[in-house]
Image (cartoon, rainbow, N blue to C red):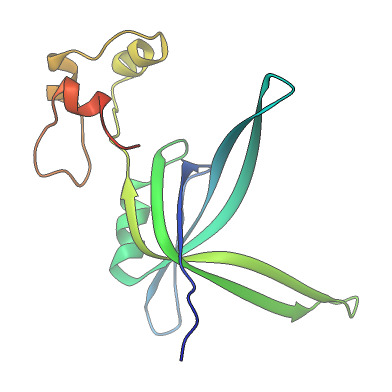
Length: 151
């Protein structure tokens, strides 16, 4: 019987993904994401950032490589994997990473003008959404749907 090993995490890519192949030709994409946690302490809003390494394999790896870029929002569903090894100093080392089973990317607005409008707090227009590249979406979303998106 397997024990439960499942994780769901959202964050932003720390750097562009890297794509490699195994000796048998299987694609492996690795990327790191930063996940923010906000909490109150002494009536002050505090921010805690955690960084996680993610691996995706095969067709999912190729999609992550093609769609991902530094700063883009991402949601990953997967499992945790712990690697252990003896270092050159003889000490036991270990690293926990996430093996992705499902990856979703937030909408990617490629035009710099639209990014400046969003960062300046301007509302999205229907024209901006018509020009937006919404990766993985079957159709364009409206302004109201975008504002009510779950992440």
